[in-house]
Image (cartoon, rainbow over all chains, first blue to last red; front, top):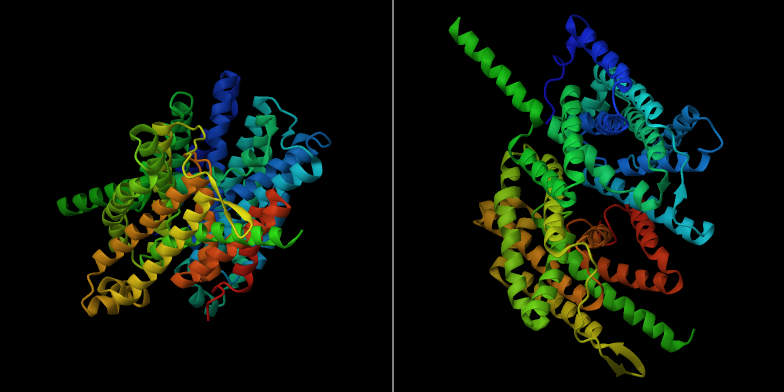
Length: 320
Length: 290
């Protein structure tokens, strides 16, 4: 699923890339002035899924460690919001949510260094379920409640907050992907032992990027919580939040930031469209999409695009 | 806190353990031999439970008899899923690790598909089956008949399966494929057939477990995932790929779960996860691992 990344994203350095990107951000920044609340919320939704998809791929894409723990980090962000939302201003709450997830991921990363392959996948899944059930037990036995109220924030500040997070996430994904750390991560994904022998500090790179990816999930969770106003452990730690980024990244194409943005956007809009009228069909459709992508489109939709371009290049080469 | 109470807890744990062992052995076949960590395992349990429920409620078929229909049907469905999906992934994946990753994702897809078809068909409500829910007196303690039937069925299946693995040609082929797939193929084992058969057999055991679950607990279309998780924990406990280990792992989990449940019901799942996380950190090869 990982393709040659050296060529990818070069337009972000020069030419139309940066102009296109800043243009899009600018448009997104002005949009709330013209949109009704419903559209604003729906656009925020898209941002949320793009961010968790990108943050999942940041670690799991190059290393091929399939992390099923996004829900844990996302949920930690949500609970941070619920606990301190009344005491602190909104931006601080959001940062704190990210920090809590970051620290959790550091601890998890440091304790699971030896785990590889399937053990890592299962562990991350078990972790988010453990946290969910522990929080539930804590709430029921110690606090005596199940759910909590979250101070709600207007849709427009939430929209801007998510937009800022989105821009930062894209920038971080892009720069990490092209930095030494990105190369180191990819080498870990290809062969961990070889990377180790080449002088890559495998541990530091893996844990560091895992924690950064968790930070973004936590930040998103904190922001998302203000939209719900009521949360309980099964909402906050819903395993769906672990599956969605995997599905969306696979659908879009794991090797490409653009692909993931498109994948997450398309699937989120599809969910919004179907959720109200056919609640079960949309998960059914997601399942079918996931199976089809894995079976027939190993590079996701960006893979199709890629193969179209190479085909065209071949044809032009033959003609000349 | 007298002797009878402890007997009760232990016996209840054994019944639960028998059920978990059945589920875990099914998953172990799918992972240990076919290398598919099938997260949709619980959905096959759910299908088995709902098939039993529907056949009993709408057609008045005796649940024990309906097993003759649901078992083979679910076996065939899973066999087909392996032939169409996982076989293709196996052929296109460059390495075993890539295959495991991709088939994990594909089985997530399968989970969504089966669960939501069930939700469309049966609706989200909780359902229950009243069958053999009377009680019987054994050694001074009262037991529900269906729990005794469950224990007996789990035991019989376990023993039958073990004998099958030890003494039949297909069983030997399965063990060979579990040890070394390529060598088994060189020795004339039809690996496609064996892997598909293992996957189907795993689902068959899930269907059997589903039948037991439908007699003992309430059922909903979303009930599958917790069972999958328990099965995964039991399989890891016994060592990934070790079928006998999964059986023991399931029994241990059932016992521990029932003991914890007697003292603090909400903590039983937490206890599973703590066992699981400690195990995976301290001894990832499982209790029977080297």
